[in-house]
Length: 441
Image (cartoon, rainbow, N blue to C red; front, side):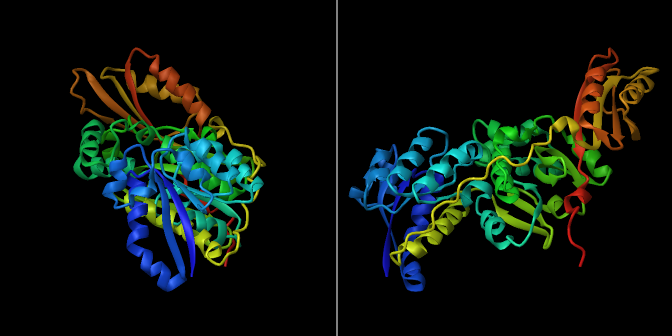
């Protein structure tokens, strides 16, 4: 039996889950794998957190440097989030020959190239299963189980907060603000929900996964982002009437022009597997040229699901360390080998909802704007459901349209006196494109 010494930085929701999981499964790891996991240093700003977790008094430290420089520690687990001091934690741990496991999607989504390069230079590993989709083991699947494939598409529901909000809005006919408040009270949403509802969280995850899947450097800043704040109960009802469900999707596709990577509210057919992912659950849809369509489903956040992913990375490293062997060093990170497709070149169908003055000629004038911008319309409907006197709703569905053309149309419509508001523009995803390039059996 070999002992693997662990230092953990952060004892909050995820860190606490990691400690509890190691303690509860310790004897199983010894019996099944001959691996003795020992937490010998734990860092937090509050010693009471360590005491609540039952950690020995000599294990606690308020200084992360003590964890990263302790010569007895083999693996450092960073679960504090944010950019600083997390960056310095990585750098110091690597310089001292420690492997680092992290759930820090925001940091890795932007700076994994720098950090992975440091790991490679120092002969250690950086592992991040928990950073991409919580408890769903999709990083390992893409890196190892699907190595026999060229990855064509990675898409999915990668933020549980927004999926919970959209699910309740659909199931209960509620508005965004009402459900957001309930989600905050229930602990599904943060007091500041910006990272979730504006798409940054999902963008960080798709940046990590698409970099791995397409073997080219993609950062969070490369990802087009649009959140769900403008989605209304009316939009959800209208989508349902057209046979669609609205989800906040993170989508990355390898195309002949480069990598198409984006996060935004999306209408998908009701019969698609992702449409049936309800509540706070996540699902990642991966298409390989040989395997075809696969879907990974589970909890994308939470104490124990995320701790499960962290422990998977721990055990992958511990298997070698416990035998007295050194795990293979991190590979040099992927360089930017594929261009990023600009969102203005993206082509899709659109749903457009306008609040307009209910008077003669308004419908024709609005429809003429689309024609002038080269946008073909497949459906028009009018709803007299607005409480404002003299205002009604127009809903358009378009044929395939370039984003640039829709941007021009949006600007022109917003400038019209007869248009009170361009209330909503939502993309209708052509999911058939996700499987282009799959080998036929």
